[in-house]
Length: 304
Ligand SMILES: [Zn+2]
Image 1: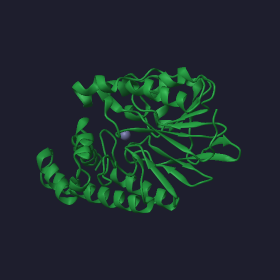
Image 2: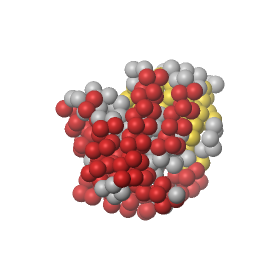
Image 3: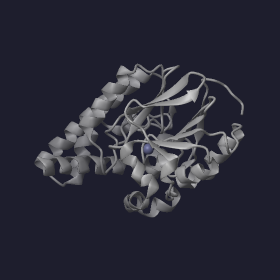
């Protein structure tokens, strides 16, 4: 294959035909690694992009998943079959969902309803193709280069970020937020596992890595990693706090929760262009944020 050390190829997975929503990232190296792969409905698009990048069926060494939400891992089964030498790397909490995706797929389809066909499912992946990444696990890319798995829960308990160590490139997945269509960074905090305290701790950890470059899954490189991490942290903190306060005086009232959260951290800057608004609403992601916060405060009330 065509080798350009250090180069990151950003692949637009064209989620449901919408550009600029969900990315996959190929690190070109002796042992090439693909980080995330989009939904199952994007498998052909991603496969074609890898072929165009010069990868033959035996050339992909690693398929690394930031977490097991279907917009990141749905194509993994199809791609594992298309690239039989690729090892799938995932957080230990996510591995069983790749082997038996039935619960993950059913839960996702319950959340997305009529949008589910645009997302698709997930082909099961044989257990012997999967490595469960320990926190700090190093994934060799050849020629002295490597990726380091950094557990970064919050968005989900099975979420991790990946640091390309020689150049300090951070693939943050969904830990920081979403920045699409010319909008500002804004948290993506879906059900069923979002946890603001874990999310804030993860952002502190990622900031400590002092990345020189950073990519988010939705979508692409960010201009200033330090600024983006700080913005993501302030937003999650404000939204989490507002959700807890709203729950204290109006438990279960989703409208009150929405008003409180919107007031604490208005989404206006994230939605400031028509393109940003289209992408945020195409898959109900704003509504899912509210459900994520509601799930969090209800869980906290139950556990108290
Ligand atoms: Zn995502």
